[in-house]
Image 1: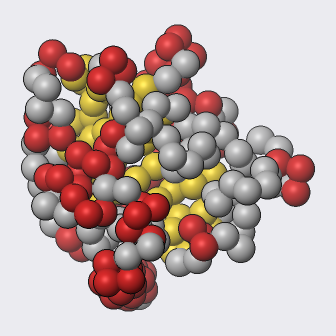
Image 2: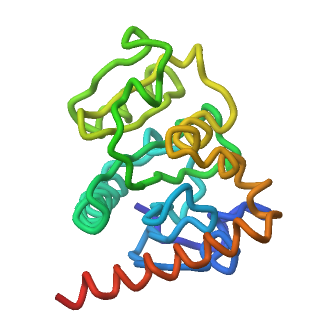
Length: 211
């Protein structure tokens, strides 16, 4: 894996620039990743795992990068579940992205997969490992991935849409006003609540690591 260099970032990408507002609340940094509090959280405990290289999704990761990612994915999944009682994850694998740079979401949610995809179980395909995303991406060039306590899922891409998972999780969490992060960003009242949630999350992470 090549080391992170200025040549590997892209101008105007909020997930490439270390000084971007999107990376303001850093929880952990490794050689090739940032783990941050989502600055537009759907709920307290909403975390993003972001590669420093401009890649579209996990399916595009090489072997070494994926190994580094999966360690972070497991570490922070355990943290969210132990801290908030549940954990889900999702990624728009080149479908429904509003920021075209890989970012895997982790957040507390105790509902079922069918709540996120009410179109029916026939629109879901269960996978046994997140590493399967690389094979799926190589074959199809895209995917919609999410995980619940029931397992890991690929969604039929025919129902894909912009903000596919954000809108659906926001609805299930009864926070529809947070589906669009751009609209949320301009709402001072919501952002004030979000800042409190981020503050709490940062403190939980500090306390978790001090055990």
